[in-house]
Length: 329
Image (tube, rainbow, N blue to C red; front, side):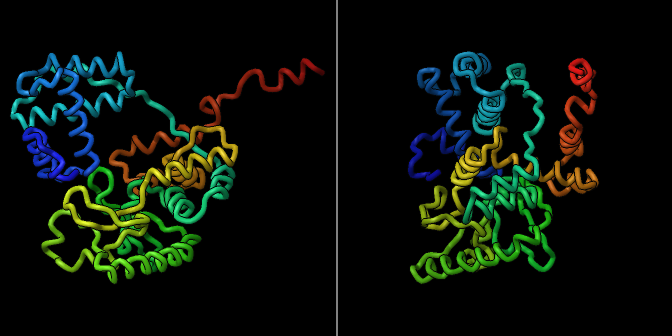
């Protein structure tokens, strides 16, 4: 989010507080948006003139009138709690009672045949990235943010840097993707060389690495594995760069492939990650190994896939089985 587009002193302070804590650009955009919506909901009153009562009224409006999902309501609450605590230095009091309770849902999992059928309707970057989601258990944004240096062909490994929860981990690189990935990177390098010849070729570097290593942003090792199709203005630095590929394009491609494959399950990009974990467990992998591959902090999060492994109804055999055949005989 470009600072030139923000004229509100309050929002500028909010952005400074977010960047001080190294929150992602998506968190920044979401928190700024929720702050604006909160202010407009209360007829442009300044947040300093409001408090717990107004925050509760706004969250109630989201739940009752807008019928938002629990995760959306909680995101709005987190944004406003951050605003009052980190920017206004006036933490909200008894407000946690309006936090929505998330429903526990079993993950949607595709069979191996369904995954194979799905891949038939994908090609190019869409196919390769989807293969990494399923073959390595990556989250979509972890896949999109991969740098060339994160791929270790010799050790069949992918280094996930600063994944969810700011954690690093090493995941497996499927053997079947080595040749396609090398071919893909050869094409990406041609794009990077063309950018350099045009006077560009810089990529975003986290934290202060640009100042520490002035030439690193143009080096091949730092480039994205899945670069964007065109150069664009960086929303924070106002520099023209080639960012990573648009994750929404991958999501649309997978959705279209699900429909084309005739898969009736509500599958998405994240379903491929769920399927990766489930199929590993089906093949006898230790749950701790799966936990490390997925980057889960608590093994309880990984244990949800053991429920998917059980045959319908926790492997309970229905008393109806065989009854209809006997009665028809």
